[in-house]
Image (cartoon, rainbow, N blue to C red; front, side):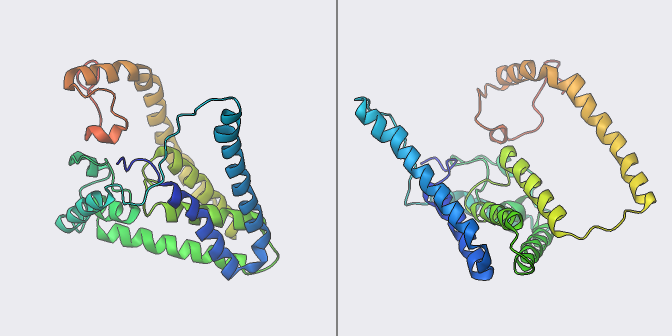
Length: 263
C-alpha cells in the first residue's frame, strides 16, 4: 500500500489528541475544543452529503478511494532503513534530504520526523531540535494556564501540537506546503508568547546587511534559473529516463541537470 497517503484515522485522531491535552492542562479553553469538534462534524456531514447522499439521489455511483487502513502501510521498512542510517552515521547523519538517495520501494522519506532527523542530521542536531520543541510547547502550555482565556494562543498551540503528532507517522517536515504553514504558525506563536525588548541598533544593522546577500541570491534564482525550470526538467528526464517522478526527492539527487548540462 502507498505510504505516501496520510492515514485517515491518524489525521482524525491528531486534532483530537491535541485538544484533549489542552482540556486537561487548561480546561478554560473548552470553547475552542467545542468549536473544533463542531467543525469536524460539519465536515463529516458535508462529505456524506456531497459524496454519498446527493450522488445516490441522482443515481450516480461515485468512484471514491478509501485510504482508511489498519496496517503501517510499509512504514516499518522505511523506519528500519532510517534507523540503520542513523546507526551508521550517528554524528552528522547522511545529509539533509539524502535519505532518498538510497532507493526503497515504499517511500522517499521515513514518514517519521525524529527518525528522519537522526538519519539525515545526526544525533546531536536531533537532540537540540527535540529540546527546543519540547521547551517551546511547554512554554506555550504555561501561557495557556495563565491570565485570561486566549483563544488565539490556544488555536496556535493546538495547530502546532497537531502537526507534531502527525509528524510521527507522516511527512509533515518534508512537504513544502506543511513546512510553510509550520513556519507561519511557529512565527505567530513566538510573536504572541514572547516578551519582546527594544532591539539594539547594532543588531538591526546586522540583520539588514545580512539580508542583502539573501535578496541577491533569491533574485538571481528568480531571474536566471526559474524561467528555465520546464526546459531543465525535460532535459533531465530525457537524459536519465526518470519520467515525471511524484516528488523531487524520489530522483535521489539535487540539483537536476539543466539544458546546458552544467546546472
